[in-house]
Figure 1 (cartoon, rainbow, N blue to C red):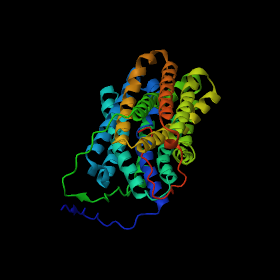
Figure 2: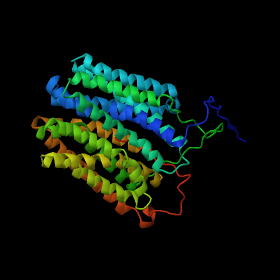
Figure 3: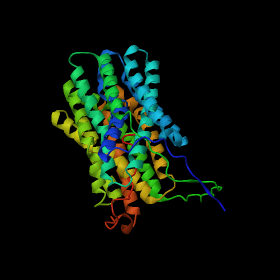
Figure 4: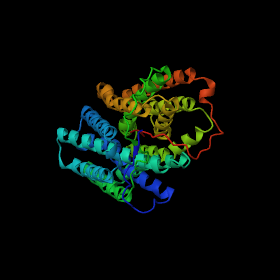
Length: 416
């Protein structure tokens, strides 16, 4: 007769802070790791083109290096679950991230920039998985919209870093922008320094694990996987080059201002889409969100001016985190084995391929790249429509009788 081996109790650290205080710490970590560490490159990129001599092709390669590092960090967290339950991992990744931001102005070597952005990507991924694991682990008994506000930290970091670059731009150069971003990341890291990682709560059985049945191919999951992987390709092109594209047809402040609006729109988006998911089917909402995002990405390529730039920013910011929330929650609903891991892998590979796919187009400016990205996101919407059509009506209907408490929110990539 098998017996379960108890897991040692974690070191006593006092009571968990209130739910909203915990959400605030997670939001600060995600703002540092994703909003600043990953996405501050977007508003700084035009400055590096004009002041540091960075070519458009090299700019795309730096973006790709960051996404490769992110994939490596995510894989490390997947292969070593203990790593993502460690406060030392979170703190070490925060320190590494700040160091890579501060070191960017110390060189003009593209090779060293590649190493720094790759390292920043790995640090961002580790921060993300520790923070999200803590968020969902400690708030599993709370309504799904509460973790949604934690994911809004990504948008808050984008908005803060965009405002920072706007403030620096008139009085200093690209070097100061990187140093200022390192200072901002330091402040956010301090706010999240005492974040308590998730602790394992399920006993580990000492009996040999039964062999899991081999999953059969599910065309519904295939459609979801294709949709989310294509979203990784399309969204990251806008996430990397939107500011530079807007700046080509408008005055410089409009590009930076649009990026701030992206962040502000992203702050409530995850919580909003989670609430909408209680009333309508997630695959249907995923389709709607992807179509809205495709329109937002295409707008700066089709029209100049402030209005087009700001509407584009609003539509993109309101959807890119929401798409991740909806897609991963839908994968969980389909009960396909390791759905979140598989979807995250496809999304991450898509992020790597996106800048590489549009690099040949950048010699003609950023508009062709944005148009291609919008078409890819529309293709993702078509795959989501196939998924929606493949699901029987009762499978996607909202079960209002299920109480919110006790339901666990699905993790999101957030652009991660």
